[in-house]
Image (cartoon, rainbow, N blue to C red; front, side, top):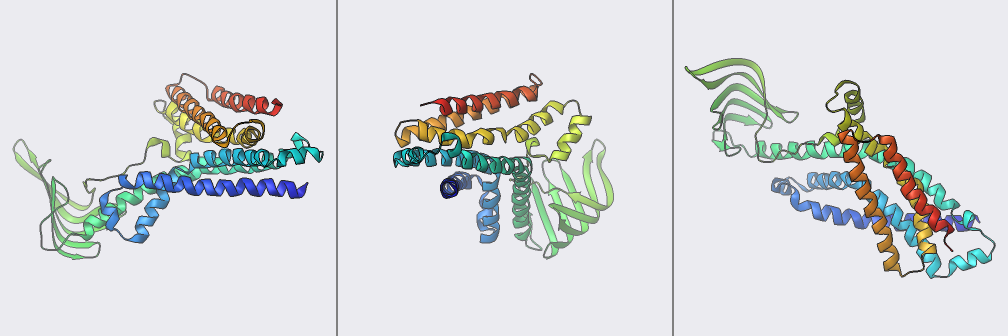
Length: 338
């Protein structure tokens, strides 16, 4: 029995890693053209880091599809190779056969929770910050001292002396806002250009006004600034919003519900996929297509009910029950199917 369990477990993991590799290549390839062109000249290490964060941002649903389809393929392989009949002839029941699948499913439930609650939101925030930071760094690196340079269509910069990220005698002109900034020193720190000991000149009805500053953080207005969405906020921030901000309460509740309830399908999808593969007497393409349709319908349900929670039209618990019923009833149907 242990040999059989080990065989099923290893087969599911083998198909899972193959599918994850395939999905990663497809997703990275589809997203690579959306990256700012500057990153293609940022060096191989930084470029690979961007691709890693891009792939990690989409890993949530890679995990679901990969695990579900791997269970389907293992079940189908047992049926197609007639191994399932030999197993039943040896006196092994259906309940015993799905034990290793159920054990792996519980492991994936925990993995899904960790990835949904922590890893994907973190990856999205890091990707946004990493891309913006490196785009701005590339622009700053291209600044040549004692030369006027246009950072964008509206902003022109002049630096008397530049050493790495530190600059002296800096001049910045914003044509759109008609603002002129001068400073003795400047340094690029934490995604901002920090100016020291300078003046800001801006227009007024009487002519112009001048403000003196000792320290001023200037946000570079470049063509590409990647910002992360509300859905990528960390869990602590979302919980604080639930307690304090009534306007964003439902939005925060929807995000948290989406993250927590993402683990529910993993309770059933492993066993469901395995039963679909063994019980559905169809070709491999038909079995995979059917499994994909189940997955797509789940994504539609997820999107629809998360929107309802965001609007305050439904309690998140009801959404959790609907997911449980959807996958649970499908699993029961294929379990009882002869």
